[in-house]
Image (cartoon, rainbow, N blue to C red; front, top):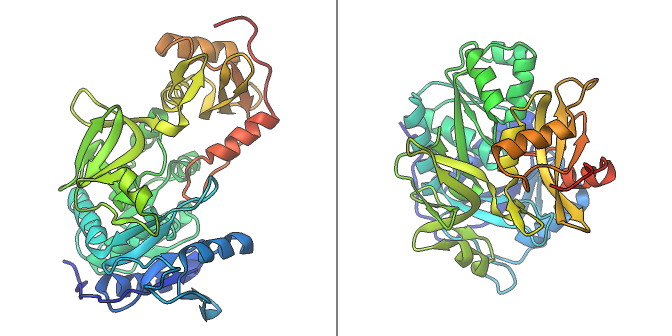
Amino acid sequence: MCPINLTTVTSRPLHAVQFPAAAGQRVLAALAAALEGSGPAILPVDPALPDEQLARLLAEFRPAVLHTEAGPRRLDAPVVGSSTAAPIADDTAVVIATSGSTGRPKAVELSATALIASATASLRRIGGSPGQRWLCCLPTFHVSGLGVLVRSLLTGTDPVFAAAVGPQLLAACDCAYVSLVPTQLRRLLDAGTRPGRVQAVLLGGAAPGDTLLADARAAGWPVITTYGMSETCGGCVYDCVPLEGVQVRITDSVVEIAGPTLFSGYLGQPELTASVLADGWFRTADLGYWLPGGGLGIRGRADDVINTGGEKVVPGDVEAVLGTAPGVADVVVVGLPDPEWGEAVTAVVIPANPANPPDLTELRSTVRAALSAPAAPTRVVVVPHLPLLPSGKPDRAAVRELAQREIAAPLPGSR
């Protein structure tokens, strides 16, 4: 089934590739060579990255060449193995750069073996067969879009590349599979789009919420929820069940993952690697729990926990409750500085009806009944849309800044 032949690589250069969705075939070709070992490892780069951020990225990870539509450009970078540039591992095929908005950016090294193991397990779970095409409408500089390309290589097909997905494209592309983030799926549903010939939709990147899943499945969409991150080659848990070969455990409420899809480490940051990767287990930043049937549930990120009056509140728990509350189309919960409580639980809400936004008192009552008094939001901000990262996840830093600018008055009285 796999047309990729792995070869031994004794010295691995790193090349940055920066192409728009319309030139996705060039990323696909570079990826194929990287997986086979006949070409350099690749660092996919956002084509919309501002010059200053691009310069920072290139200076941090030191690729030897930058490939763009204008052609290759050799960079002033030390040779591999020099004392001033961290060499990549010989088996590294792809380096995924994560957001550097808070401190030094990270570069996740993914081996060809891990990427192929991930794609193989994914195809087995969904019943993918050779010749079935994928629609690639996620950025290929993120692991979710990259995963679509690896699966396409394994099935021997060329994916359909698109910068955005809409009803007409979905009807015309004749693809069996597609990966989406919740925002994309919600827009398709709101437009009355039917799944057509699509046999499976891998939905990841952010928690979809019960309402979205119910609406999608009622409309006939074959949705499979996925959980994973760059360090696991993307989704490694489908519909709460780990893929073949993947192991999951929960230690001190934090999800830990083992198996053949794990990353090799963070480029040039051995101490950071050692802090999260030990004895074959990767310690994520996500809080998890076991569902009654034995599947994995995710509450949210440990580093997003809000400390309000000495009580710990998990934003994901509050979002899960408010996401199904009357009048709420979407919501992100953040903590804002508060002189009395330390942090105030703040709900940033997209209303189902902008002319009649949900009432803070009612939202508080809903959360108090389902969770606890400390978890009830003391502030609400109504917005027409939420800031998103290129991956489709809510940009929590931007949401927090937005809320600080447009904060509503807190509810009078004590909790």
